[in-house]
Image (cartoon, rainbow, N blue to C red; front, side):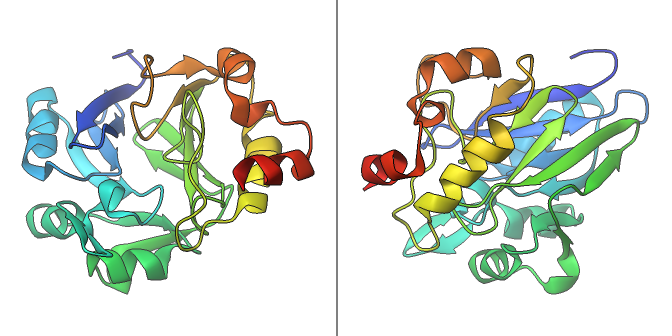
Length: 225
């Protein structure tokens, strides 16, 4: 933990998910990104660190990232969190209806976000980036030089597009126009631990990840089927 940002990467659940705690050491405020699987453990970790939860940030509406139920798959997450610690849930405006259907939270629980929006957590600023493709309202979060990318981009590979709402062309645009131009010293923190590294600088990801090396949309569409 740096003196200026509280940032913790927390492995969670049987699908190699990562939950992230992001906050301000001075004010002790923090948010949880994709609080799923082990709500009691997540809240206990914040208590141990002396942090107060003030919000939840959701990258997308799949239950392994937000809890709830979809297509017979179920995971603990927002429904349990909102019972124990009701906080504003920040979701992209294009993902709000899906999140509501999967988790059962209400419209009044959600703060609908657009790309470029910013959230202050004490002295720390979180910037919202709309990165559709894996789902229509997938979003990533920039915290100084840290990119919390959900299922849009992994250290190796990227999110799948064969689930409802997936769109290969949108994902290509998100990768090439939103994430590819980020500064070299940006550190990628993915939504899953797929591969040997839990995080990596973007300069390294560009060199090793096929998802950032495809030269044209036509090639990309052929690759993604």
